[in-house]
Structure formats: structure tokens, C-alpha cells
Length: 253
Length: 267
Image (cartoon, rainbow over all chains, first blue to last red; front, side, top):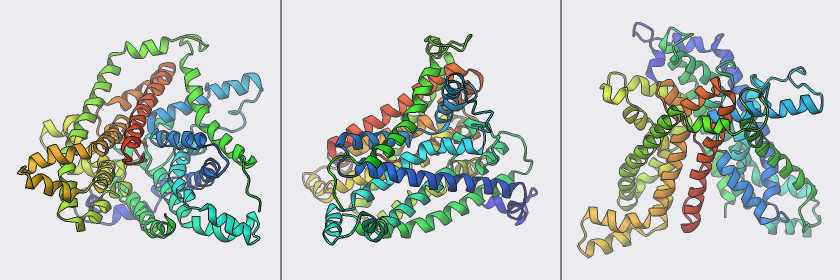
């Protein structure tokens, strides 16, 4: 980490850090933060919906175990194979792309869709963001006790009132904590984006990677400064996460 | 507010969205892998036979599997006695170690490899230039949270003090206590740590790529760039390996209420 504060000749400097807030490096941070925020929010929202639907009373037990088991596997299914699975699905000769073109007459690539772009990276990241959300939020949803619903119902609360005054306030720390976790998860990802675009999308990890594959940068300390910048962002996330996690533990059984 | 009995309509919607999103890419990859290389049309198993007859496939898979075994052995040798000791003698240190186990979240592989390449620069060749040295060291660090949380749960589930005292008062030495009394009792936890580590090592791309080692995920990426249809077959096989590791984990966990599935691995 100290390397981030050194110049090429070995003397101490803050020049590398100063460079971070200027183009092109600040753009990489912007793109990274954008991708992480988008996938964390969408992943969090949809993941919450799926988790709640799978867990709530009335849904058969096997559906729930199928979803949690699959999430356990899918959350660990990242990197190169994941990138390729999406290339085979939505790439220019992917199965879904071809199907849409030949059978429905829609060429998504002519309508501005491109898998090998920022949007594409976001779509692919959601494949591990959703299962992670389901895994992380499931225990919290379990903690929403049936008695609370019944009590609210007996007191004449509508479904909306239950969620507004009981359900969401109880779940909120867990949801925020999970979204932060998702943010960090996407922010740190390298292999998936690399496998998908071979470095065409300007994310911070990709820029760091490009240095070590031996091109682009001539100052090794820039890569270290970039790594330091990532570390700062993730450390801030962690500082936000710990108190939320503690708060969420209050309602744990 | 009415409490329903059957599944709600919105549930069908969410579960449908989830199932589609999870299944479509896998199914598409499967269809893709059946396409013929020359025509791009269905159906042939050529891609699979291409993979099976590829020397690099077996070579890199072997490297990755051996690496996984090495990482598991080193991790368990290091951390089983350590965590045992912490639980037995210095429980005050437990939160400190739990905090250390969160560090790989703040320092993900892409940052870690930058640091490691710098720190290990100048170490002897047998360490720096060989996967068995550099990569194994990196993977032990990478797998530490999984090892720790699994083992910690295992140790918490047993009565370390009583077991140790019983063993000692019967005249057993420390190594005997550890091997014959403690180890069998945390077998499930050690196994789940091992399976998680296996999944992590088999999928790890970032560190191997930046440090220029040829492991299984690197081979996978190489095929992705050069051979579209075999790459699909290989992707499915890789997914199968992850499934196998995670399902074994679940089976082990169910038997003894050990640790639940944890997340992470190859991003």
C-alpha cells in the first residue's frame, strides 16, 4: 500500500494519489461506482422480492429450498464461466439473440443493445448479485414473525400499514447492509468484467489489471495508487456496514 | 388485512423472474455447446470431445486441483490448532480474528495481488515463480474467511474445555488430544471449510492471471477467446465443479448442523 505514495525514483509523494482524482483515472472510479450502485440497487430490490416470495407463508417449502440452494451455488458462480454463459446467451451469436432475430424478427443489436458494454456488465453482474441478496436477506425475512402480522391484522392494520410501520422499519437495517455488501461485491469484481469485455469497459480493477498484463501504464505506482483508492472506497463501505449489521442483529431470534 | 393460505399472485411473478434469470443463461449455454463448429448449427457432442481430448485441459485442471488440495492442507494445519487454542485459552482474541477474517472483503483479490506481487518480489524462484509457492500462499489468505467461519462454528458447537480436560486427565498428550479427540468432533466443520476452499481455488482467476500462472480458469479464458463452442462445454463443466463442491458442502452441513453456505469466490 505504501507504494501508492512513492514516485518512480522511490521518493515519497502524493502525486499518484492526486492523479487519481483526474482523468482518466477518476472516470474509471466513476464507471466502477456507477456499475456497483446500479447492480446493488436493482439486485437488492429484485433479490428482496424473490427472497420474500420464496419465504413467505403459502409458498411450498421445496420452492424455498430450491431457491436458497441454487443461490448458494450461483453466488459462487462468477468470473470467467459466468461471462461466457452470457456470451452464449446474449452475445451477437448467442442463443437468445439468434432466437429473437430468427423467430421474432427483433435484432437487439440494431436497437442499441450491446453485451460488451457497461449495460452488459451490469446485466451479468446481476447474476451473482441476486443470489447474494437472497442469501443475505433470507435470515432477516425469517425474523419477521408471523405474530407481528397477526397482531397488526387484529389491530385493524391494512397490509400497506403493516409494511409501512412494522415490516420495513424492522427490515431496513438488514436491507441497507445487504445493499452495501452487494456494492462492495460488484466494486471488487474483476474476472467477470475481464472475461466479458477483455478490458473494453473502463472499470478500476480492469485498469489495474491492464497494468500488470504489461501495457498502458509505465508507472507501477499508479496501479498501487488505484488499488489504494479502491481500498478507501471499500473501507468506507465496511464502516457503514458494521453498525447497520449490529442494528439488524437486534431483531434476530 | 387477510392472511392468505395459497401462494400470492405477486409471489408467482417474483419467483418466475428469478427462475428465468437463473435458468436461461445456463440452458442457452447448454444449447450453444451442442452447436457444430463448422456450421454453427445443432446438434453434436464435438465440443465435449474437443475438451476431453485437450492436453491443456487435463494439465490445468490438475494444477488447479493440486493447488486446491495444497491450500486446504496448509489452511487446516495452520488454523485448526490456532482456532482450537483461541477457543480454549484466549477467547478474548476471537473477535480480533473474526475481524481479520473480514479483511479480504475490504482487500479483494485485485487489490491483494498488487500488494503480494510487491511484497514477494525478490523471494527465491521456487516460491515466486511456481504456483505451489506464490499462488498457494495467496489462496490460503483468500480462503481464510471461509476456513475461519466454518471452523469457528464447528468449535462453538462442541464443548472444547470438557473434551480437553477429559482427554488430558486420561493422560493424552496435546497432539493426541488434538488428533484423536478434537479433530473427529469438528470433522464436519473441517470438511465444509475444505469444500469452500476447493470452490474458491478452482474458480480463482484474478490473482492467477495478474501473476501469470496457468490454472484452470486461465485455460477457460483462453478457450473463450479462441473457440466459441468448446468454451460453452467447458463453462458448463466448470459450473458442474462448483455445483459439486457446494452440494457436498450442503450435505456435510445438513448432517451435523455445521456451517451454512457462505458466499464469495471468483468474481
